Image (cartoon, rainbow, N blue to C red):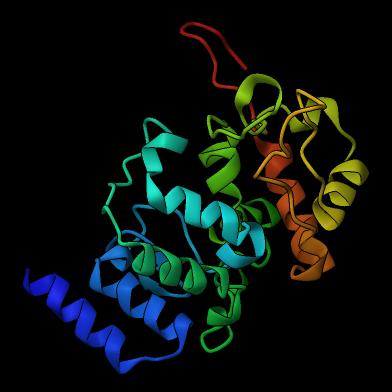
Length: 222
């Protein structure tokens, strides 16, 4: 009850929808699991680029009932009111990487600048690639009206694509192919990261993807 009252009070002080959404986000404790910039928890996906890689329609749908979209997600259903859900979606949709501007990008640390694979791994996690393709590229995340019902895993990137092809895909993005041509458009798509990542950052990301390998079965050697 006290939490709800505190959230409502904070939102009444903020008339801007994005500011209201941020107040709800903090009031419900979302920042205890999710990072925005360099603040917040690291248990859940990084949200610093959430508004660049997701539509507002999908955000609103997911917040309504996270497990209706991904049945095994640890994300709880907060049973948000329509207003709270809409405002949080407004806030999340506003997140397009600006929160790194004050402190610098985490993948530009001196200790990893000379290691493209490590640097690319940080980029993969912090811009949110892991939210769609899974940590370590192992997949398992859903999408509607796509073959297999899931976003592709990336553990075989080096086997199926040249580095030039992967660079082009990351830079330009791609709409998800429909499994049923007469059905709805898939709600998750690959954004064109060339709008926000530099060429050397994309190259580092490709180096990381090329380092991924399928998990070996017991007794199997790679």
